[in-house]
Image 1 (spheres, rainbow, N blue to C red):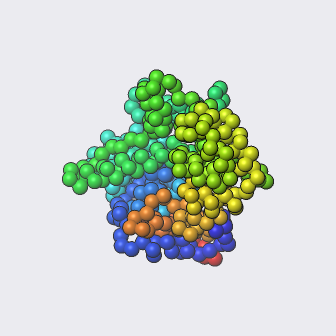
Image 2 (image 1 turned 120 degrees about the vertical axis):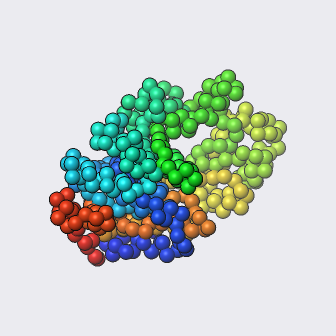
Image 3 (image 1 turned 90 degrees about the horizontal axis):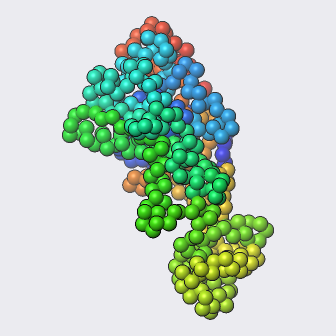
Length: 416
């Protein structure tokens, strides 16, 4: 599947839903999302993929994330599928009143703005629960309550604070992970909190406030290293410097400069690897009898294995490794995933229609329910595309919609 195909009709991206029998788990749940960038939109996307009606409220010019360049160019399309768009000016009394009326109709409210912003608009949890006691309010923050709670945070900030950057780079060179891991996982934990609160609401009839935070999320990612120190008294070394628990657990350079990660974590895998490489001499070497022996010999062992592997290519090794259950992975660039045979054959990449009518192949949530994947049911919304329909449903007449600027958002989506 190619990254982009020609302009298509708006309905094409909804074809995935035909493979999903019956109602989706969150059908009938209304979510109002007031968020930008990655963390809050990820939460809204997950809830939308699970079947909720997600209404994204944007400024009249649209979420600024739509206009990011460079590393942010893919943010909006990645985390904003299965959402409607309503454009409201929250700096106006009319726009703010319309949003509050919309929240009155909601089950869930999602936000990820800086500390104090929601309270300044009268959109904090204490205020909104008076209007809608059943509302589940999920805030995506930099830090949970405590001394840091008023700080601004970014994924990079918390990776530095919580040990992840230290564990990723070599000593003295902290290095952030190459993706927005905390933003994405923070949105995921926000969605988990929403699901728990929805379940409890069945019994209590009342909503809850849910908070998810970047720093605490990243601390969880590093908890295993904290506990390694607690259990052994020895601090965990950064990934490039650490002593592996397994002797063969590294990236090797194959023929023609190709790179591949290869592991042999048990004796059966070690024997199979030696057989594939025709290295009976290593099997007969008493210094390599057990995994622990091989760990102690890792310096010279990896070098000699590398010499054997440098004469072979991936096309030769892959079927042999698969047949012998040896863990391996070619070193893949993100852009190469569009052509990944597993993703394409398994339905993990599907066409998503963008706001301009073009298509892109988009990875889905990494789950299936009764064997079905949760695909796009609607294209990426244009700014304010659903303003008129949503406000009319709330009882707004055309004059009031026009006052809010909604008539400017009513143009139909162009067909191919």
